[in-house]
Amino acid sequence: MKHNFFKVLNQDGKARTGLLKTKHGQVETPVFMPVGTLGTVKGVFPRDLKDIDVQIILGNTYHLMLRPGEELISEMGGLQKFMNWDRPILTDSGGFQIWSLSKLRIIDQDGVTFSSHIDGKKFRLTPEISVTVQKKLNANITMVLDECTTHPSTYMESKKSLELSLNWARKCKEVYEEREGFGLFAIIQGGMYKDLRKNSCENLIDMNFDGYAIGGLSVGEKHSEMIDIVSFTSEFLPVEKPRYLMGVGRPVDIFKSVEKGIDMFDCVLPTRFGRTGRAFTLNGELNLRNSKFSNDERPLDNNLNCFASKEFSRSYIHHLTKTNEILSSMILSLHNVAFYQKMMSDIRTSIKNKNYKELMNSYLKNHKFYEKT
Image (cartoon, rainbow, N blue to C red; front, side):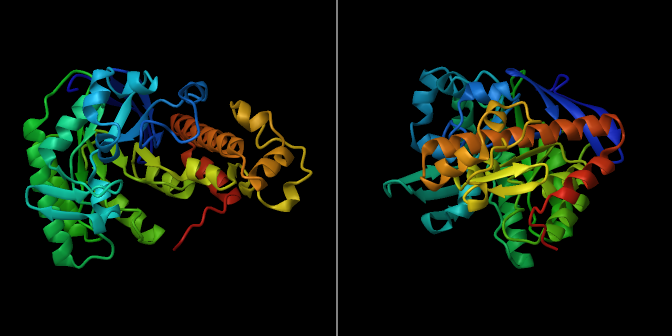
């Protein structure tokens, strides 16, 4: 992935557009990556993702190595062929599950022992195993195994966690086999402590990864704290490498982070909201369970390049949602992903036209996206 892997194309302040070139296609940044944990973006056909121009999705190492197993996926030709998706895929290393499944694991210096959340069986995840599994999944972007630092954590807890993650990153780098069109991203940790974040950046940059992710955020801290860490950390990252803010997020988080120079985002929010009857629109969020939509003939959004957004009335979706019909989740999930796609396209255009702040203010003026100070 060393050759012309990523190129910055336009800038407006610190906000930037870029082009990421992989074996399975190009990705325009800033980009939002829908989460497909188990090899599927929940409730959405891969064909429909292509129709709304989704360029890259996520899979998850932990979950896929348990079911159906990386060997089977490898035999099937990799995750792209297995799920009928011929575009780029990024895989999370399993590090997030070290945080989210903390009651089911034991960490040591060499890796982590999980008790499966499915049947309780013990299995091992190490930096070496994580990289090997991701290669068998055929991930275009492999993430290093890290410990997602808990929040809140003391300075010493964060420091110890960071040192473990740096050691694991080094091991991942040692076993990763470079291939054209594939890359390995490091993950910056350090909790809410700026000197630790700086230390993480310096050590990981010395190891020379293909991209750099900011991890350990969106785990309970305030929005303003998160943006402060993003702003500080991004100052130390190489200009010529892609920057990825993991697990984020809400539109307000994305806009404020793009402003600081972040290129890549992922979050379960669009499809999770879709499964709970909620829709993103240019005028804010709609809760389709609300009775005020029972006789509303309008579509969700005529301005989106998405049949689900234009061809069903809010009245019909309200009915589906109230009766817990599966189609409600499918319509709203696809619509929400389409909303995010349009938002990211607007962001890229505004950076090219050097009116990014104007676009950001326009979006956030109409959106009540739970900004917490």
